[in-house]
Length: 200
Ligand SMILES: Cc1cn([C@H]2C[C@H](O)[C@@H](COP(=O)(O)OP(=O)(O)OP(=O)(O)O)O2)c(=O)[nH]c1=O
Image (cartoon, rainbow, N blue to C red; front, side, top):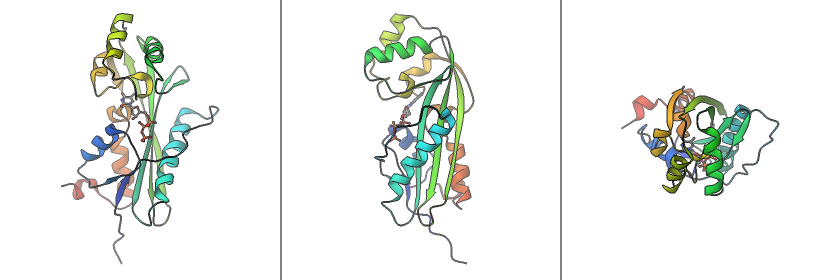
């Protein structure tokens, strides 16, 4: 039986965090940011939304190739049922962090891997609860002045200075950063790609 050609592996993302996390798995891959429409139906549950968007991002990139595995991901911060996206400006970042401080929210990351050759897809998500410390308005303003919140869902980055805003998490850390790597390895394995043996 012929061995299936699973190359290239393509990350359909412009997120530097996702690139770094995929690099940490030691796979060779190329970057091809998706231009998919990221609007969603607010009636859908957060887990459904992140899966649909992850799939849409991967599918948008997959149409440019005739073989390979395309990875798409999407991350959302949800506080008491309300979705908090990326802040438009410092004021919005301040409002989001003022709401998140002292509370528990959930970060959802959807993941999709599409085999371009036959269109087969693995789609799933992971959710992690984040307990944020109580923060004074001064601390929030000082954090925003670092510039870190700007392109991050929920206005913080747990992998950066945002780490010191967080008391504890329940669940997978990488889901908060934006790419659930263990779930990704599971999906890649289903396509016949074993991360532990191809890593170099
Ligand atoms: C909560 C949180 C989010 N984030 C980031 C991850 C994502 O990049 C971003 C959520 O936006 P996304 O729309 O998921 O991703 P993106 O637009 O940055 O990249 P692309 O669609 O091209 O893949 O928030 C962190 O980096 N750290 C965190 O702690």
